[in-house]
Length: 137
Image (cartoon, rainbow, N blue to C red; front, side, top):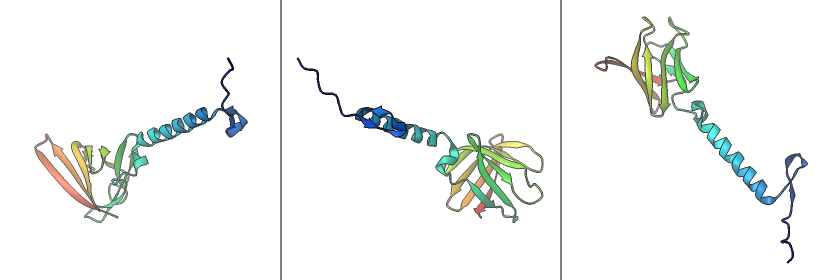
């Protein structure tokens, strides 16, 4: 009985010889790895919370990725450089903590993005809550 014919070989990057099924599997694996790595970092999805926000008093706060979360930091005014929130999740609702820059106390909070508005809400004991609405700059 004769041996089955060998499949045609193909040269891939680096000059190595690979069979067509190996090339296809390598490409599929690469595509899956790229997709998974993009899901692993919040900024990779260009979350709507990212960017500069105009606070009603005229000051600016900037939301940026910080580790697996998003940090909102005062970018201008009296509290420039102080973190005012750290939240995680995906649009439109992000959960975490809101920090009062005047006292440094943190509260359970949320940030909700609706169009060009961001509502930052902080609650003490889940009973007394306060919200601020910011506009995208």
